[in-house]
Image (tube, rainbow, N blue to C red; front, side, top):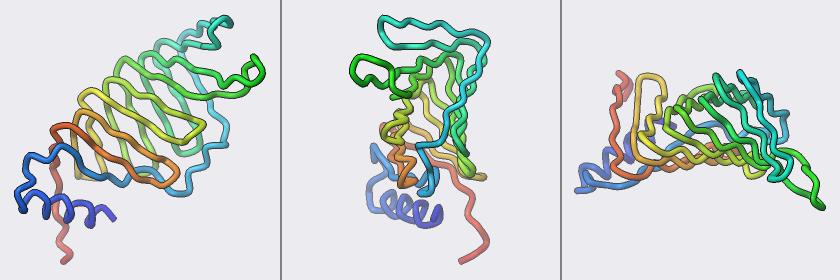
Length: 165
C-alpha cells in the first residue's frame, strides 16, 4: 500500500506538481474499533462540571485499542445527552502530541481526536513516519475507520526505495 502512495506522490511530482499542497496518506487500520474503552493517564486531572470538560495535564497518555496518543495536556470533551455527560465526544491535545498506531507514528503541535467519528486532526509541524519513510506538512486529517488520511500544506516526503520492482 505504501508503495502505491509513494508511486502516486512521485508521479504527481514528476508531472509538475512539485509545489503540491496536499497528499493522500494511508494510516491506521480499517479494522479500528472506536467503541473500545478509552484509558487516560496523567500527572494531574481537573474537572469542570459546568462545561463538561476534564483536563489532564503532565505526561498524558491516551490509549484506545492499538491507538496511543501522548501530549503535555489533553482536554476531554464529553458527549451530552439530555444535559448529562454520556461518554467521550473528543480529545483535544496540545503541548507536543505523538499519535501512534500499530504501523505508524505522527508528531504534531496539537491534535483533536473525535472518538465519536473515529477521526484525528493534527496540526503544526506534522511529521508522519511509516517505517523508514517520512512525510511532513502543516496539517494531517486521518480517518481511523478507513485507514486513510490527507496531509496538507507544504508537503514534503523522504522515502527509502525497496530493492523490489
